[in-house]
Length: 290
Image (tube, rainbow, N blue to C red):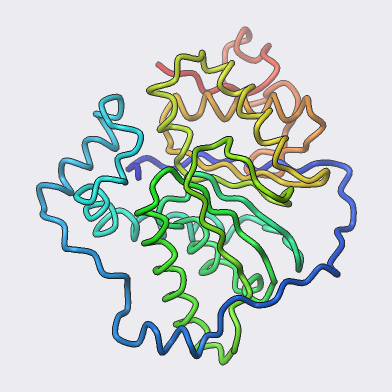
């Protein structure tokens, strides 16, 4: 969670090819069963967070990032604070963003969301893209916090039950595969889409690698996961370090033959006006830290 406007980049492999849509998964959930299961609650139960815990977590997520432990969401107190306050604001921000991005997935596709936490991205996509709700998709949701993943699964199932009731549908065909592990954990299938939201900024502070090395390592890992015509969507807080990292990744993926689909599709020397000549001479637009 960040109070900054998020940066994001979406990369697509070119030239695009028609995907095989014949591979169809058996639907995992029945909305009537979900409604019965969750009729006594509207959101997953967590012990209410004390205001001071929310306040402390706010500093750990903003001006005290470097002191925050990587596995902070495995701490029940911090998870309670996060789910009490930050999940809902992140959902609002992600839904607004995703409503303006084309997400092309077909029946039978696998997708992977890294740093899933409480499945915020998957829930936001379900809200933002009603046209995808009947697609039979398999999601690998990967995070180092099993507590956060369990909360997120309950949240997603509750959301499916609610939207299924309103839409009159009988099935929720997204399969959620929770994986407790870090970015780099092996998956059993190649995926059509790799996503993450607010994960890499948590790695920066404890990584011994230079930012350029971290970007190249990230590219290598993502390419290992992707199908030949896969797409990548990366979302990070609007801080200078995150901007610099995504700019470096732009260069990495352009060299791999990807096209930048959003937000700026320009793949050559940056043509943004009002920059010094020496700045415009770079290969890519780079937001460098102050």
